[in-house]
Length: 201
Image (cartoon, rainbow, N blue to C red; front, side):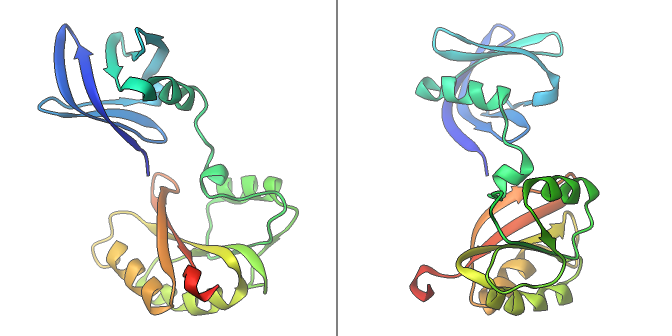
């Protein structure tokens, strides 16, 4: 999930009013006019009269998001890595089931002392890969293995007609879990974060 703010955009000599969205890898304006600026295309970014100025692909745009401008500038220069967005800390006990992303596994192995590839009682974080609806049956067992304040991330493919977010949310609810966050896991996968309801902790 990104950050949203009311915005006045100045682009190519014209002014527009609408909403600005700051995601993990792009900046977007939505209104009568739409503009999306991937971070990788930004060649310079700075504050100009308390507005966020970005230069990209030989063009220039001024996003006036008020007091958010400085905060957004820092997030463009210092975007969070995936493990930070997933809330993984060095001291965490982590389990990974059916997640085959090599870059993720390599980074995770550097962040924590041990990565368990089976369920371990008292886990802080469990990553469950689900490529089809039947894979979600493991959620109940995952719930029994996390700490009361632990989390389960369900990693699923994007753009599947027969297996989508509705299946994931329904399975989480059936397992007695609450969906609290969604992040972009990779270009091909999304991750939903489930926790035990506060009333049951």
